[in-house]
Image (cartoon, rainbow, N blue to C red; front, side):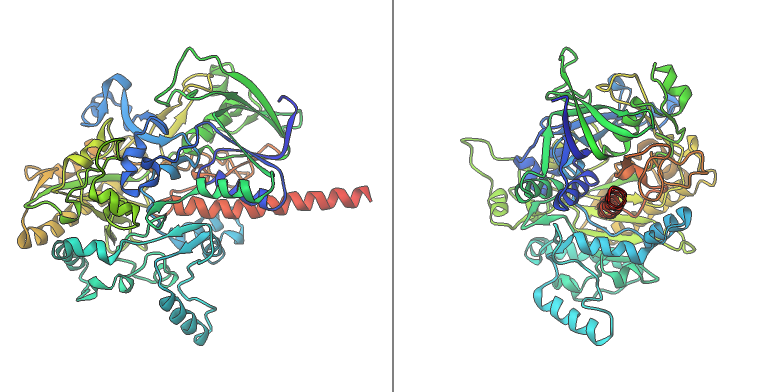
Length: 627
């Protein structure tokens, strides 16, 4: 095993590592994927409505507990704070597919300005918004546009010289996307009409009788919408599902294993512990530990386990795709990071990159939760639990087995995009309706889904945040230990303007505006934050206490070599090293879009291209030299 060698070693199987490994193997190279978790295909994984259960499933959950504030008094004010773990629950996934195995599957396209900002920062035109769209088209398999609709669009595009499809959706990629079905909406037609009317009234839009024809709703992933000036809209949320079943990088990888004739290998229960460099600072091997539940975040973790250590070598490159927490941790454990910090833990520095683990960013989210006067009809009979052997299956689960019903969705049916202030170039608030009780993440939160059928939550997501002061730091030099994660929310961060907080306040006020419309029509009563919190300052205080996030990113950011805090160049290469790249949510200079998974999928496709370009160019040069 010590002499194992592959062309490429990819650490992590999520939204970054999965597509990269697959594309390299399909190009004819041998690739080994190291995944610390195991492969899980249970109902919590497969059923979209069980995504909250998946995030707390012991078979795949990695439980991080993070600090929103270093100030202990402020941290303790959060109702979700867990004193025994000295932090707030932040669910991640340790399983094949990474966090694509437990996320809410929402696929909303990033802002074009996200790509243009990177293009300007790194001076690389391949990052232009126009170029990046091609990667979305390559990976998407859009199932929610009917064949008739596609044909009409294609003819229209040809007539106007816009290519084959002006919407620029992809229809042959590996990731299927769907939307909520009209049949499902009909179960709560009157109530859903009221919710949509409330959102449309708030945006001063008139949707009229378009509700029953969901294809006429605005599509946030349509290129014409992405490039429009307004982009404040109401729309049904696109989901990464296929016939009502979750799909992600797990399916992509397993299919590639079968199709590539042994080029792609996947090793689960393999916790990467160190990247090995030679004297030229070239990454040449990965050391990993073998066994289940080796990482401390795992619910099956045992401190007494004595795992064996294996070394695997890479002929060409090592690609690190562990995510915003684990990628900087592994870099630091391998000697790449702030030299002074590394020496504190007895780690010999290999490359001095003080930006590793810094620049941590996230969304701010809060929930406005209300009790409806009557339960949602679409939730009637739904237990939101997998079937148990010997027990009768609930009718909603039986519907899901037929590819229909509420279990085919993640719960997020209707979303609103809005600017928190008129002068903003891009909408920075996404507010979506959940027929559920959701006030953030805490141990056991997923059980609240099955307890309540009469709750409506407006989940308010603040994008384009200014705060970049978060950081991921080593807790020890033990690769099985979790890092120390500090987000430095609001006043502790570096958003001196306070715009982040003001924007979330506007989001809460907008949700309440929509609720007033709903209350007049069908009746409801707000429970969180509750009627006692009314002034802007009271709302702001509620947000400071209760906000959360789940899109951690930017901890190994791209930037020019002259920037002392940059970790990567525009081709994902780690500054000061050879043969080592990072491809995951940690690479962004600023957190992109609303839901970052779409952006990570896109950069993974781009990274595949540049890796192949560089390796094939090097192979060509070597062949020429040999000749």
